[in-house]
Amino acid sequence: MDLLPPDRELYRQRRRRVMQAMGEGVMVIATAPEAVRNRDAYYSFRPDSYFWWLSGFAEPEAVVVLVAGKRPRQYLFCREKNIDKETWDGFRWGPKEAKTAFGFDAAWPIGQLDKRLPGLLENQPVLSYLIGHDTAWDNRVVGWLNSVRDKARAGVQAPATLTDARRWLDEFRLFKDDHELAMLRRAIAISADAHRRAMRACRPGAGEHEIEAELLYAFRRGGAEAPAYTSIVAGGANACILHYVFNNRPLQDGDLLLIDAGAEYAGYAADITRTFPVNGRFSPVQRDAYEIVLAAQAAAIAEVKPGSAGNAPHEAAVRVLVQGMKDLKLLKGRLDGLIESGAYRRFYLHRTGHWLGIDVHDAGEYKVDGAWRALQPGMVLTVEPGLYIRPGEGVPRRLENIGIRIEDDVLVTETGCEVLSAATAKTVAAIEETMGGH
Ligand code: GLY
Ligand code: MN
Ligand code: MN
Image (cartoon, rainbow, N blue to C red; front, top):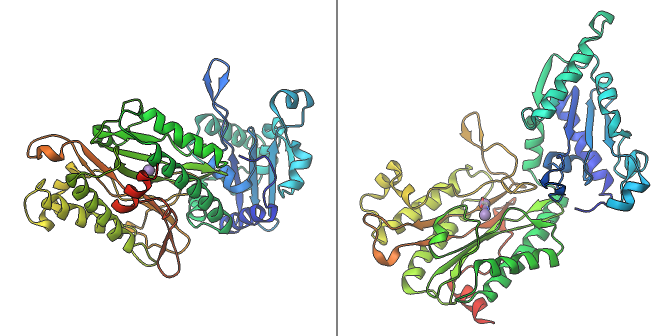
């Protein structure tokens, strides 16, 4: 992620809106800890998603503190400048510069957090943070509260209420602003290019790892930080393992290849799946199965519009998939009965989508007061029906080990929806043409 300052006003405004929603109290959101991979080698640093949404600040060891109320204040704690360390590890903003560049009212060295936080909590009614996200932070918060309570005899009151910051932040994150949509579009465009490369590089005898390498190349070349999640490159029967990530088997002539891969750009995730024949031509049975999943996806996407119940795309996809399972002779019985009994879950065991944003499975409630929430403009979700046919009783031989998922990223608009990942070949004809264009 970029160390450059973001659009300062945009982030300041986001924090202001959060404080307005809170009304009163203090919110404390830390960025992610740095993580050791082995011995003294670290995973590349990636900010906490809530912190990133609130600040656009990419350095480790940083905390945002928002004090809501009549006199709202926005504070940042971050690393101090350190010429020695910067020579080894690169640029640091330091509090003084960060305050201005990132639009805070004040910024202090991260080493002062424990000293200053109790003071900021004095006589505040509410403390809000990501409860249970990190045990070390839970303990630290209790330490601050106890420090404030130590002053009880001086008439100082500690926050009596602890609340989960997610209750405010999730709702904001669910609705993407123009900046977020621009970042998502970029992540998705890079990923579309990566899927195109993968289709073109695919041939019998290639390794799944070689195809994964094409994805990684396209991601980095396009300016993405990294994959948004571990890419799934699953040939043949591996496609029936939903979270297959070994990506180390040779690709066989006559098999399908399922790729679920998306880039992360400026902290925003794409999440795209395509399934295509290793040799570039669908066999008749592969085509039959593929067309069912494609039709299920079309039915689901048709339900992505303002006012639709959040579950409507899933229900539409399931209906088409179950009819398809009947047509393929995988299931026998009445359509409604098969849906009600859940018999179809043998071949379709996941849901049809999820919110998408800074996290691939993004923040946001799916139900409100027990009911699926209605889709609204500005929400972004995936639509990803699949069909996974493991060998077993009653499964015709010719269908064994076919695993298909088709996944697109969809924005709810005022009038319906926009498929943001539409540039990635999806119909049988478009895929065969892309693959034939070696
Ligand atoms: N790639 C993760 C998912 O599709 O949900
Ligand atoms: Mn997904
Ligand atoms: Mn996916």
